Image 1 (cartoon, rainbow, N blue to C red):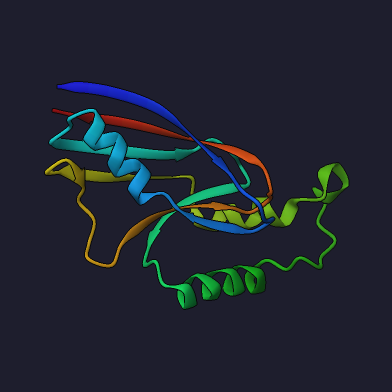
Image 2: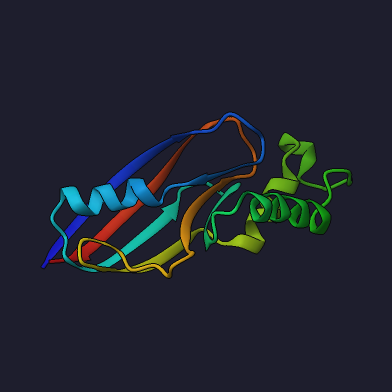
Length: 136
């Protein structure tokens, strides 16, 4: 049994950006020769999220639209007095900060249409995603 930890740097270029990180995670698994185990992917930011969903351009636009409809940019949030990003914190609350995914055959054991996404809700920024792998 091995325990492996890595920090993945992600640089975003937009305020609200969805980044597919599936291949990067699979490369980490492959490079460390993990055949079977579990990966935990964790956003180290309270205005970002980790989700699993389909990588379809229309669906990604729909995700942005629904999150903007649920949490409006145009509101007088109390937190905005501090740094004007309450909407980003509130959207992140609906999405979650981590996912745990099984590893089989040296890759994430995702469904046919599933990908792992990092969602930056308050970019552009330099971000960090923690990857913890337990396996053999």
